[in-house]
Amino acid sequence: MLSEDEIIKQRERNEKKKKILFIAVGVVVGLIVLLGIVSFILSAINDHLENRAKTEIENETRRTYIYPPADYDYDIFSDAGYLGLDRGIWFSDGVAKTVVTDDNLKQYSPEVQFMYNVINMIIKGDYVEYNKIFTANYMRTAGDDIRERFTMQQLFDIELEYVYYDESGSEIYSDIVVTYWIRNNNGTFRNDLDYNDAGALPVVYRLISNSEGIKVNDLLSYYKYTSGLWN
Image 1: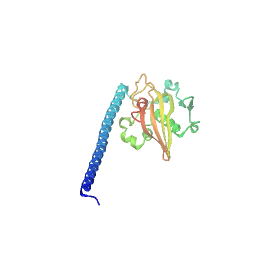
Image 2 (image 1 turned 60 degrees about the horizontal axis):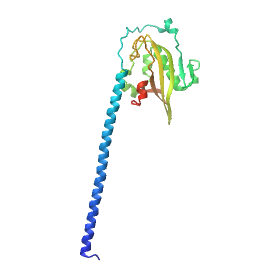
Image 3 (image 1 turned 45 degrees about the vertical axis):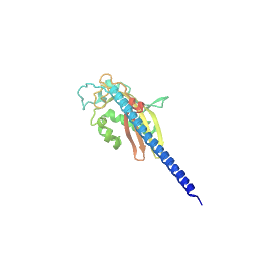
Image 4 (image 1 turned 60 degrees about the vertical axis):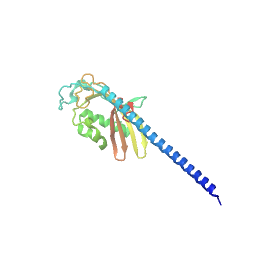
């Protein structure tokens, strides 16, 4: 049986242990709070830098052009100048290029077949079908990217190329770079290209493929895509 002095000493030791435990818990909680604050600050700084970088890219790529009045009745297939250009839709695998046609279309992947049809929608000015290629989520956030109406587009030097492909369960995600020139651009489809020198500013169609078919989940300029800020 402990003496009264031993009992007092034991109580003092227990009190010290409790104080040490409380201090340790306080230090741990303080470190957690501090780490949370630091993480929040770093996240805020990172978001600020990303937003500034996005703004800089958008300002660098934003252009204002003046276009002639659009003729929605003009048949580009009656234009000899356009018919004399290379209007083939080429597919590049990074090594070789082959031309995609109605006759050999089924030799290519479903995603390439899909983009082949999209290109033809653009050429034919079929804005109704073109707007159907996008997911509902994209259409909710697309803003100015929704093409309410555009004329037939004189596309030439057209090329498709995979830059990303991944299978995840029952879904396939693929990114395809689409490059082309537009002769006599009138701005109804691409208002980031001039009329006289509507050069090849590539765009990336980000596709999602599943049992319901293929849809465009996002559409980015090549500059935005390669920056990684919109991925």
